[in-house]
Amino acid sequence: MTDLSASSADEAIPAPEGRTQIIDTEYEIGQDNINYRRRFVFELDIHNIVFSVSALTIVAFTFLTLMFQTTLGPVFTAIRDTLTSNLAWFFLLAGNIFVIACVALIFLPVGRVRLGGPDATPDYSRMSWFSMLFAAGMGIGLMFYGVSEPLGNYTAAFEGPVVEDGVRTDWAPLGGVPGDEEGARRLAMAATIFHWSLHPWAIYAVVALSLALFAYNKGLPLTLRSVFYPIFGERVWGWPGHVIDILAVFATIFGLSTSLGIGAEQAGAGLNFLFGLPSGVGMTAFLVIIITGVATASVIAGMDKGVKRLSEINMALAFLLLMFVILVGPTLQILRNFFLNLLAYVEYLPALSNPFGRDDDNFRQGWTAFYWAWWISWSPFVGMFIARVSRGRTVREFLIAVLLIPSLVSTIWMTALGGTAISQVASQGLTSVQDAALEIQLFEMLAHLPLTQLTSLIGIILVIVFFVTSSDSGSLVIDTIAAGGKVNAPVPQRVFWATFEGLVAIALMLGGGLAALQAMAVSTGFPFAIVLLAATWCLFKGLMAEPRPLSGTPKAA
Image 1 (cartoon, rainbow, N blue to C red):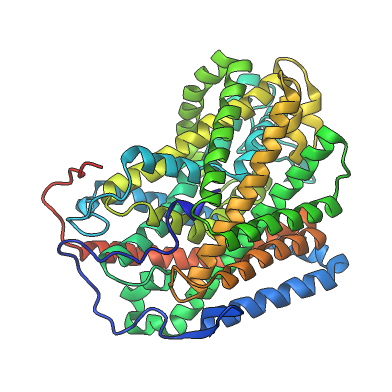
Image 2 (image 1 turned 180 degrees about the horizontal axis):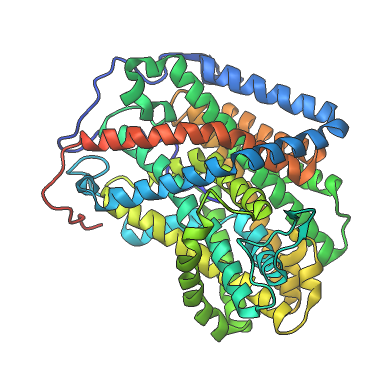
């Protein structure tokens, strides 16, 4: 989903520039850390409680899942189904609150507050900043679901509701549009955009804005616990803060593991499709090991050069793949549908975001609730990336860009790839795309376009490099949290987290496959959703205390 390497891990957090409401605290970053240094051998700088509890729990979870993999599959499936069926309303309601909060901040006077202080200037030009937000909007998720979700929604919507014993068993969003090809396409794309635009980016924006405000304007460490100073005061450096940071570590590592497992599954399917290599859980686990090894080597070698260049190459390849599909696919239809899909999204948004009184349980619980939990589990990761590249922007400028740019990128991506697949099925009758497994549908769609071998290979490379950069950057974020807010903690700690991201992904794949990955994303997303709702209140309180300039005109970037 994103790469944190654009912001150097060794830079200290700059002091606020101009008049801000600095929080006067006696806490010093790293004061509760365990330091161990032995020259040429080993080095550690870890938060005594956060690292110990997080690391031991994750190690124990991985060991137990690998030991009892044959019996845990049904358990993970039951956890996922229970949480999504009983808490779907909560996830949808929370997502709506985050969107409303972000829109409100755009129009309120606090939108003039500048991150880093009234005299701060942006660290990056607008073009560079927009490019990094664009990078944050791309990733393994869009590669895996870019074809399968629009096509799946279209098929279910076109077939309409299926009722067995008085209960709907179909996966159509809302009531579907039975037999109406154009109506089913519009509803399918509206539902897809709903999952990939304003709601997820509002979740990320709340976390990013909160981290940036309390670090850049109030002088606190760049870690989740700092956001809750308005609630806990100095107690945030004790157990209340420990619990928040531990939950952030759990959410991030299981959210990352979900993406890494999905990415490895798609890469394995692509290799099978192209070269006839064996597929299945064994190949997926093998790919996780290999790519985790590459990510670990990248951590050891350093992030600023290798990973940054990999990310730039990946973004170029993603752009080329997108333009290729637009140019050789149904070009005029894609361009026209981009605008029609946005209109359909606006039309269906109230119904799709409604938490109550709906009967499309499979779609609402199996798609939307899972997605919202997944985005929430990713929010510390993506939020910290956005925070670290957004210093010097006003709150209003920040929110407009973070909400709109990635949303538009996701919309054109889904319109091009998913819309082409729908056209192949609806207009050309190519049922092989529709009948393929989720992880292979991207390659089946590309198989009906020119240069299949090349474009499919590019797709595999994209998934693998997104895997590497996500693991590497995720290790930095988790380590920053587990090191008490230090952004330049020793390399061996990042190696530990990179290794266990891969091991957790393997354990979950062996212990239940995609259902297990989804179960852990939902399980960690639920408690962290409560944390984020409290963080939203803290964000408003923190912004209301900030001095505001008379004019919100952004400084030149």
